[in-house]
Length: 239
Image (cartoon, rainbow, N blue to C red; front, side, top):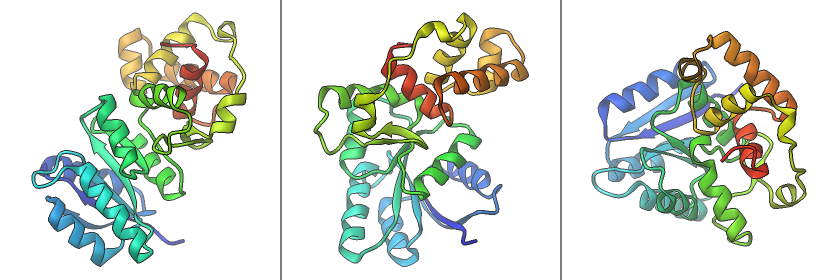
């Protein structure tokens, strides 16, 4: 099986090393190159043609959003297939929507857990969008306000967001299907909390959290935490 070839463009050394270490935990992923600036990153991408470029939004010489636009433009002209996963500390509406308008395939916060990062890479590689649950609300609101806007990505079953025809026909979820504790856990999932953090905030064990998460996924007919977060937000189960 061919490996997922990933290139990192991140100016903070410790962050870059941490991401690389996380990715190399899986044999299916190969980190083919690293760069600390947009200029060096673009040269690297043109040479290595990775499957995915993980790009920091706050590069020193050029905004990561502008670099994403350049990468996508070059990919279109040269028939390349490099997908872009934006990595950022910014969770404001302008940054999120600008990233997708520039052609970003996925969007992660820098405090993302290793397991979620690996899942984001897999989902992006498979041609789907992965959006950090902590910022899903922003894209949902934009999709609802401007359903015809091309920069608002569509949602599929593996990650946020959903396709437009699915979102229009999705049934409203009865909040009474979830227990009060499950709703509390679901709220924290939407906020992007890990199982360990949920356990800490609710004063329960990680094992109990996993049980609640499994029950939530079953009741919402969701494949993963991201899809559960999207359905919860769309149906109004959480705010």
